[in-house]
Length: 560
Image (cartoon, rainbow, N blue to C red; front, side, top):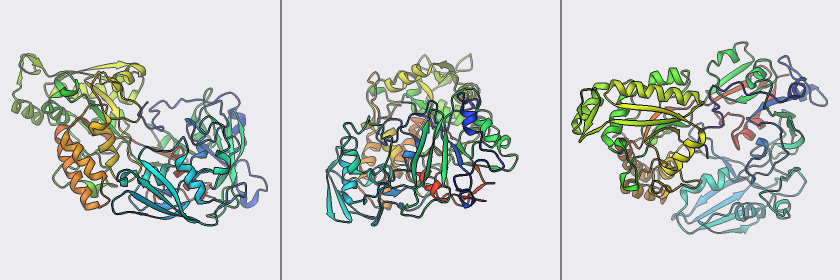
């Protein structure tokens, strides 16, 4: 599994169009382009690139591995929307309210009344129950999902599940029981003619792209943009070209020089950094990690030797954000950061401080300028994927910066398969790697999934999907605090446990933070209004973002 943001096809901005896509998009121009049927207030088609490649396949099944983007938010909706772009309460969607039992073993949800599926059938609690108990979605921790009355559903769990709230209410999409229960296989069925509750309905699919049209009976009101076209891109052109020539109005992609795209005033760029880039360090000797990086003092020294400002400018075109060693997202998650730890990772290198840490741990500088202890040099091998140009630049810069502090880092570029194999088996010393940010304004999922012993295993044991503690970090103090935080819904109690976790991880540095990745979104503000803005991030803005894409589409309006 590749842990890199979908939007981060870093610097590879020559992704191209399949033959025929140019004709497919030819009706759209920066001056207005193709009108939807009827013209007038309908405005023109909104053209979107969300990362899809050609040939496009008609698959609107949210349970399949690769459904078309519009399925996840524009056609199917969750009970509530959790906005990862900013702190705030979840927004009601198909659910109106919810309540936890004091012990976290029960969750009761009141659903929205009067909602209809696009085939005219009523949306009911039975649809919610089916959507959480079918073969594709049932979780081991769920004992039962039962109807309380015509408007309420109750979950019962075998352990406190406060921290599963987003998974249950925010990312699990609700599907129609009367359709999906008749499928022979609810995962492999392409669901080519989807019946949803969302703001849009499927229209037409070709190999080059697909369209969706407004659901005029949408419970929140008919969308103002009547037709949306999703383009597939593969060869013979570039996504960037389509943006600059007015053939795409909404896209999430990394562009090193965004002014090149936004210079004519049609497009506006939003940058909403979310996912940290780090140095993975195989850290725990007891789990089989080997190498000098298993010494926390070496990791601390390396952290101090890194010039993150230089790395941001040279590897990420200045578009990345400052990372916190607590892995809380600065600005959004500040309330979770303990006052007893550093809020930000150092932005400039301090070779003297790094040397002091090493010397305090018993290392002495050898004749070659490299620190050593007990005959072992502070020498490590760092791997990146050849062709991931931003990560390659990080590797080169870290190696050069470490050398100034008396540490030897050898940067090796390997294939993606070699990197993936080493990561899941723990057979590496240092690696440039990403962490997936949480779906809400709370770093808990990082602490549990990336740093607890439950989510790792011995070196050589291949971690299965969903276990992200690639650094083999095992700390019983962290494990106990994660368990305690999972069992409470009291914010002050969680803060106490997070303070324990943060004290441990900012000292141990199993992941050495580098930056928080840029997440750039380009939107057409000349022809359409209602987009998220820096002042009103009502939704996470990338065109590929599950659930939030439906929120954004429902709020857009054509200017004409």
